[in-house]
View 1 (cartoon, rainbow over the protein chains, first blue to last red):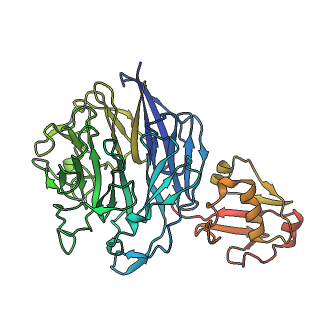
View 2 (cartoon, helix red, strand yellow; view 1 turned 135 degrees about the vertical axis):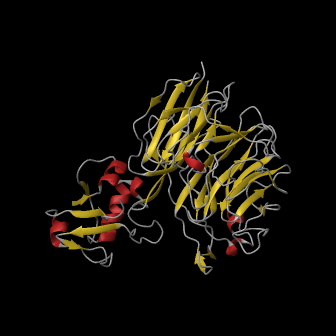
View 3 (tube, each protein chain N blue to C red; view 1 turned 180 degrees about the vertical axis):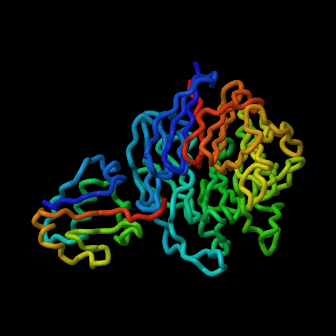
Length: 371
Length: 98
């Protein structure tokens, strides 16, 4: 009998939600690391019992926790993130040079085939790697030291590297996204990087079609069609059919194309999910109605999914790392809100139900499908 | 034996209850106490001071004998009651946030 384990990072701790394959009855754990911000936690595809969690606080800084038993117990591992060499400067909000300073780990991406190898996307934007189960970390400096690096500026949430995609089909190919620098691709395991932002158009920067400077919120890929990427940008939902070489807009009939998360159905590479948010200044759903939008055509044509979701008086947000899909036959879709709700759809979005309603603000949601 | 009081979050992280006691070889300074503390409880590395520079984290304070020692040079000797073990060395999470 299959089961699922949902890993939820919140402003005040981590929670593990478990259910059998029906996804109707749920066990909700007590908080792990209560009182700490858990930006992200994720399991190893190679060993589902191996989990990594990013734990941080404004008082005591960054920790990384590791579990070897599926979250039953945790141990702190290495937490020293030191940029390679002299880190130099990027642009600050006012356009002045600002030294690169480590703030926190936003995203942990375990290797596809080695439980001891894991990547960390950090603020200020940089990519780190551990090959010893998180005990030690070293930077892959080729991204941060790209010639455009000194011109990168932070988004409102900080200059964070929030998306890491490891391409299963092409060893050595990786994608990363930085707010507000844009999307980048490496074809040599992270040694060198190139910006892949052609076709993006951002009104809030001096050159709307600049090579870098775009506030990319999230990128998603289906492993069966690795050259197709979907992007939720600050505004605009975008698609690339050539591994980021060029992008075109697929916002289509969405009520607003602002939002944070984007994800792809586990078995249907053309089925995509977004959560439209009113605007960059109104971080809540249009009209107080929480709606996931689904396209079964790879974008452009979107349908609202409302069954089981609040359709009045709802003013929460769904953050960039707070949506995930399982790989059960009937694909499950999950998302968490800043209001502390975690919703599940066990039928690919047709209907939704809350797993839990009153967690702290949800920062991230990941799901493991266990056999 | 130096008595050290940790803030609640760091007691959880170090998996201790109440005060911790550390042995400090040589002169008892803030740096020596923190070095001994981190050697005994490696999980605390980076949570009180930067691992490379040794600089105190902004929202962490150091008190002893009703004095704020946060801005004192790290290699100055600690007060005699701390050295004698009659008073603890307090590591405090600053009151901030909500």
